[in-house]
Length: 317
Length: 120
Image 1 (cartoon, each protein chain N blue to C red):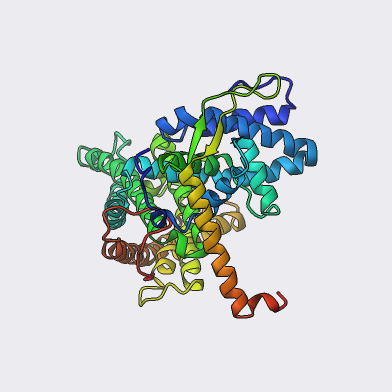
Image 2: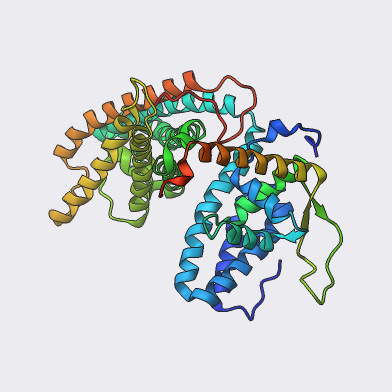
């Protein structure tokens, strides 16, 4: 679809941004419908802008973004799994368990590395050759763990998303977005990225760090929010507090870190007393995540083919 | 159209998006934006479909044989020729009828229990 240059500027840019978003849909869906979708979106923009001005555009964008996340995710999962979501959900439970184990191992290895000094220090005898190997290992472990945890959240979304109410569903959507953001920060950050900071306990203060932390906050906060939604909608079982346990502490830890930094006029995020708190936080969160993974593996619907929103998963969270 | 021979019970109850799209097409072919507007109008603004939901539903409805794309393009003087028009199939009409009847039965059940007599 051609964008008409005489459109108001806000409509013109909105349509451009929307066309960029459409790239993330599966290829065949994109080829078939992206032109029509972009045309319809432009029509909506023109109507919103001419009837309600900028507030109308903001309102349209909020509707469109929710629609985009939901529909892109749905099209993507339909494409990737060919409707065989049952297997995907089961695997996502294992992904959650494995991701948690990798995250713990990655952080542990990072601690080991930080005790012996950085691998980048050529004058440190401890640095070579073991730390170089350890560092490479850690750079693989942490991003892989974040990826697997995000897949785990996708599984929770597919299994329970439609049963945990709007709050629970939005929490899981935020979790997936957060996981993607954290992963992008891990992969894109290199030495300045999230992995480096998590492993070496270095102080941050750059945008990449903040984005990474925002991603982790959303990932775990999303699981916590889903837990609230699950309880509100009475998804009953002995396991009902598990998402709360799995998701509460890391966002709290991140908030406290920023609060401390703001009140102590310095980078205090990874100071000693906070590091002492990190250990129980990691252990409790890991136990929660692993229990959640176990729950998903066991409760994945047995049917060979299921459709999003029509899963017959038991109400067990 | 892999599932064109699906029985009515397999697809019922229809999702709100599918039902509203079928309803919008009940009185003739329409393009995507017109469907969107009509759905909003029919539901008093309660259902606002985004392009993703609209075309995702359209894709699956075509696969299920509920609607088809009309190959004929409108007069270029009257409308944009790039727009794609969709219309109901006979199966789509049957499903719309069956779903509307199912809803009516539920309303009758609610009325039978005096729900509709009480102030909301």
